[in-house]
Image (cartoon, rainbow, N blue to C red; front, side, top):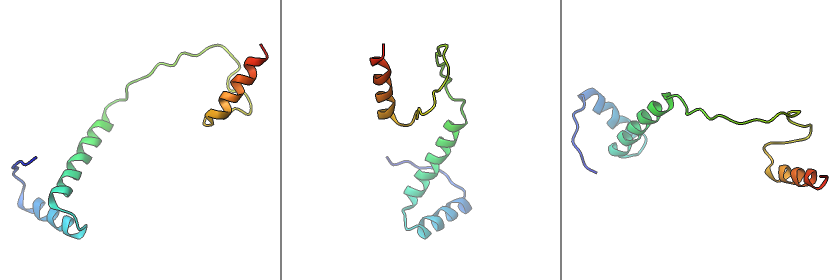
Length: 83
């Protein structure tokens, strides 16, 4: 998309130097700067809170690795066979 904006001369000059130094187009550098501002704005918003339902129990059992999905599935299947 093409648009026209007014930018202070010194800011434009700095963006042009940065674009030349990084071997990128002026448009790409300005687009990245705009994306960064928007990302920071989104990051500043409070995260949507998620309520997790828990059940009474003994907590995390020894040897359980929550980052290992396959091992968790094996453990759940193993414990299901005991019932």
